[in-house]
Image (cartoon, rainbow, N blue to C red; front, top):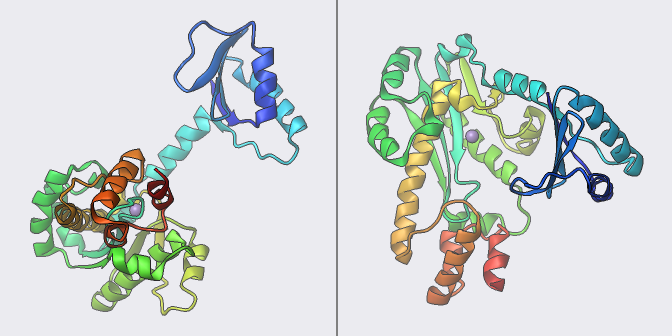
Length: 312
Ligand code: MN
């Protein structure tokens, strides 16, 4: 049995004190200590996450949960047991054959976590007759596909699969969304855009599926001032459960890769993906070479990276 939850600083201190003499010689990466309490192995991480492992892990876990509650009555303990976790994972990966084998419109986006490069949102229509064709192409595990494979299969895919793709360039993003940013609202607006287009073109579809990034009521609240398509089936991990979402995800990535290459060529630098340290380093070099204005054309200025690049 494995139980883990997060604790506050004061409980952390108590644990460190209590386990001082029970600590093991070796400490796992990112951990403060690992210790033995009878049959239970206790690991406390720097992040405040604490893990109890063993047949009676629940007993020790409960004890420290009580301490946490006592010291921090307002903190919420986000407990996860391995059993619950596995059950949740399984549930979220379950394919509903009624939807998988139907004719669907699906949408997905790329680029919202990347400092450099645009945001790309695509909607596709997959007629159920094209399901074997897509399975043959290897579309099903879209998350695992490498860039090379994507560049190879998308030209084939779009010969049979109708789609609508919207690219929000860095310039447009920076003009519209400066400090007052809400990425989920941008996603909602762009998803709605491609869905409106696709559902007008293919009104007799069985399901319209969106890879869920916000709860449905939140999604529709973002669109309260916009004409919106409303008959949506929201699904988490939809790109593995619905082929139109998988296609949408793959086409979005294809377009993103192409746009990203163009930007890299423009600044004569291989731009890194994501929003980590490498991004800050390259950003700094680019500013030194071309001046600060270059970021407006190739990056999403509202990200924290902009401040970091300014201060390096
Ligand atoms: Mn997605």
